[in-house]
Picture 1: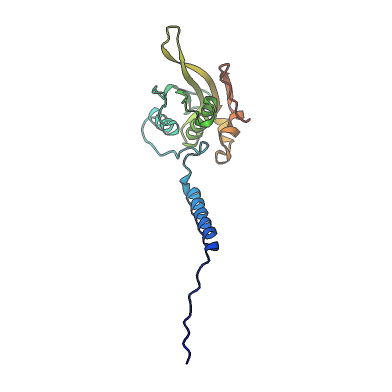
Picture 2: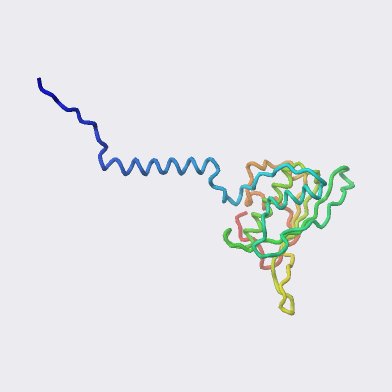
Amino acid sequence: MAWTIARKPRLRPKLLLPLALGLILVVEQLVFLRGGNSSSASTPPAARSVSGSLSTRVSSVVAQALGPSDRRVTRFHIDSLSPDTANPGKRVLSLTWAINGDLTMGSVSAGAQVETFLLLHNLYTSHLPLSDVRLTGTFGDHDRAGRAIEVPVLKLELSARTASALDWTALDDTTLWPLIHRLYIRPGFECNCQE
């Protein structure tokens, strides 16, 4: 009787490398699709439910949308939350925020466009009783004595009527920007973004 030893089939070295690369790509895509890409500029953080006064709720939503200042200045302040006589029970929010100077978006004005989107998205999808949002964006400059000051570079507005007609899940900063009423843009600060 002849005894034969059956060999286990081995993977050939030529196949091992493509299989390993394929496995790595599959894992990378799974991580990306499950939220591993948290650095996306056009995806705002999820607004969490906050109780308290309207001012407290607005402050929480804005702080969550903007995060901290990268220039060590006060990141934002609510200028007013005035009653809207044309829309009982609704308020007009006027807010000033310090635009971050981080150039990861390509330019400060492009970063301001992203921050505007994050602010408006979070404010209007948080079901706050707002009829209008008026934003003033500031950026660092120097006065005549050389002291650092914040100066307005943007004044923007988006009404709740316009915001309610938008599909916020399909928007990003570049698609929202043309829909915003731009009251003022400081010369030299124009956004060189896609419109």
